[in-house]
Length: 93
Image 1 (cartoon, helix red, strand yellow):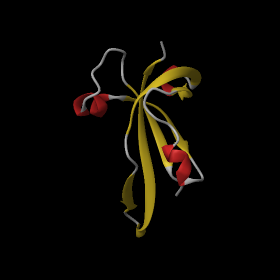
Image 2 (image 1 turned 90 degrees about the vertical axis):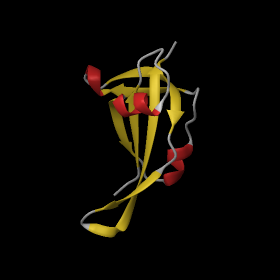
Image 3 (image 1 turned 120 degrees about the vertical axis):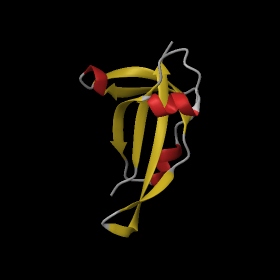
Image 4 (image 1 turned 135 degrees about the vertical axis):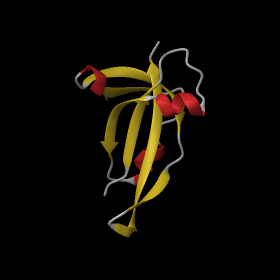
């Protein structure tokens, strides 16, 4: 399985805490070929992401936080690992 980046939305003005991150709305999931793509984005960057809340329309967002990649095993094949990165975004100003 390919590594993935999950983009999650935090409303403007919300303090970036673990509680807020757990309530963030998913915007888009991008599968990438190369793990290097997982670490290119950083807090403060402006990005354009499809917004699933609005029919997949691409919109501009500002990155609030980028989680370190996590590894999780797949139940059917414990030897297979996948890389996941959560990118938390808010409205671009």
